Length: 112
Image: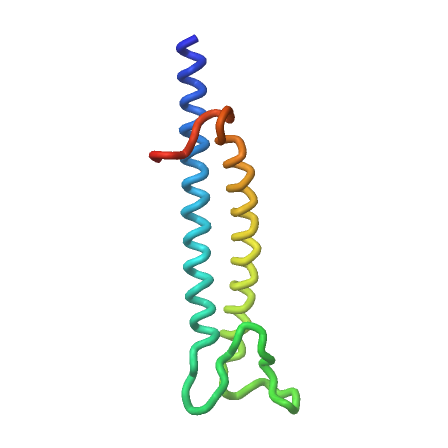
């Protein structure tokens, strides 16, 4: 009986560590996302418009905007979308993992 309880405690501790690790990853992704948004929306000065998250990277004639680094803007926008997808996946995993840790679900994550 003691061995079964010890195994259950080990499993709960492993789940707790996995959830905390997943939350740390989600937090790091959110911080990276905030840095990207800050760069994309920063005022470049000189009356130019910021790169923006979804503003056109071409001028009215269809040519690439000369006031922004189009390659950098595309790279940042792509990474921003990847992060959004990864954060949603991490939040789904956290939610499903937390469901199993509620009352009667094998322990809690309080006091990690």
